[in-house]
Every structure is written in structure tokens, then in C-alpha cells.
Length: 349
Image (cartoon, rainbow, N blue to C red; front, side, top):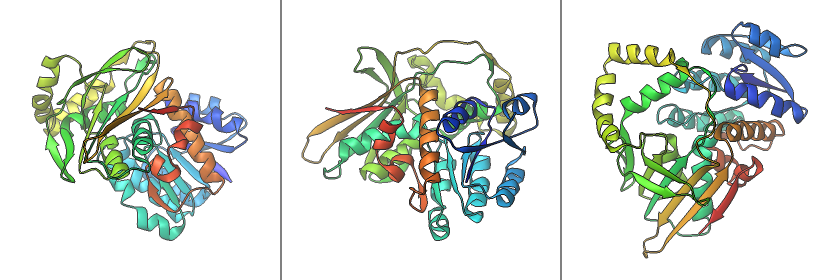
């Protein structure tokens, strides 16, 4: 049984491959033709495919046991590739964290369940870090009235171009605008609203504010709370910049402007930089109808390393047949202990 890694030469792909090899898995590298892919593929099987449609065809022909999709741009690729996995009788996972691709993937639940396939979306720091905190906080308790989650990722920046996939994700956040759940309904809100200065358990601080991530959806599904807010430290900390975000979003939503901004962002060269904080944190707070409150934290190291650990752990479990048929977010598929197995530490207060 083979595990295919799509986007094997990208940052997450390069990190996942050795973790799988250390587990003794049969790994197949999938990507566009490049010197780096040929170098990584020495002594291993390589599949050359450069579009979602070609990757899907290769999956249907090759019938891998598990496919790890790390190529990004999930709104454009995830459904096509996941459906190919279902058709081939295999399993699928990705690291999506947006409110377009994640709901679409979860919408394949009945199709996957009928075929006996497991689809896991959000298998990384984004989604799991806060979802695990929510599940740990709410486990064994009544449905809370309200939940807020805060994602504080600490990422070491690699030197190189930002790239089209990441640029498209950034622009997508601006275009989508703010979102929150009120009375069980997903509603618009102001992007960057409800800023909070968090005192982290290790004594460091981070400012978070609302953003339209799939952590919002996962927190609502995990808690059942009618009122849910999701915030992230990735948003600008300066009040003036946060105030300008809605205007920027309306401008970027125009087709020609969106394409121009995405192209310009993709061409930006990032300089290498260390982690801005010692740890990465997923945080959840809840308020129950009787007025009681609680909070939970998930502590990890560098967020991209944790993402690679989560993806490798999920893939290994799926390869062993431990997944339940259907489409899920990671903690919904395997419980909050998945985050611990990937190196995280959960605490409740």
C-alpha cells in the first residue's frame, strides 16, 4: 500500500516525506517535472503530474492507499483530487484552512462513506490546534453558549518566493471578509474585528483578531455553540491596518485587481527569519448558559513542523485502516489525542 505525497518538493511535502519514510511507509512523490523532484526521487517512485485533473487521472490509475495533498490552492484542487481518491478506493487528507474548500470537502461525506473512504481536511496546525483545544474544553460538558478560538502560529520563514498558492490564500482572506456564527448562523463580520491581546502560558504575548478561517467552522461543529468567533495572530496587529482591511477586501474582490495583486504577491521574495515566538498555540475559551467559563490551550513547536507531523500521523493511521468512512476535520476523525500524538500538549483551565 502506497502513500502519495502531492507537492512533494514544497515546504510541507519536503517535511512530510522523511517522516513517512521513518515509519517504513511506501512513499510516492508527485509533482511537476523539476530538478528538485528528480533529486528527491532517487531510489523512489515518482509520478509527474502538474494539474488537478492530471493528478486525479494518475490516482485513478495508480490506486494509492492514501493521498496527502500539500499543493495548496485547495479551493481549486481539493474536490477533484479527493473524488479521485474515493473512486480509487483510497483515502485523502490536506492542510486546507479556508471557508471555501473545507466546507466543500466536508460536503463529500456521504459519497466517501458509501465508498468506504476517509477524507480529512485541515490536517495541520490550522484547524487542528484550535479544534483540539475546543474538544478538550467541551468534552463531557453541556453545549456552551459561546466559543472563541485563537490561533497563534509561530513560523520560521524560509527564503524564497511567496508563491502563487500562498498569495491566493492571502487574497482569498481579504475577499471573503470577516465571518462569525451568531445564533447558529454563519454571518458576515468585520475582518480584523475583536482584537485581543493574549498572555500566552509561557509569558509571551500575541495579538489576535477575527479572520475567515476554517477554524471557525471546526469550532462550531466541535462545540455545537450557537455563537462562535475565530481569530488569528496572522492578522495585522496595528489598529490602523486592521481598520483598512474591509476596504482592501472590496478593492481586491474586483477580478482584474485580484489577479494583479495575487501575481504581485506571488513574486515577493521573503527573507529567512526565525520563529517570532518560542511556541505555537491553539486557544479556546467557552461560556456556558449558567455563566461558567473555561479555557484550553494546545502548545506546539514551529507550526509548519507540527503540520508535517499531523499530516504524517493522519496518513499512517489511514494506511492502517483506522479511519472511519466519511469526510472530517482532524479531531472529528481521530479525537484531540491526534494533536498529542503529533507532538502537541493540551491543558485546560
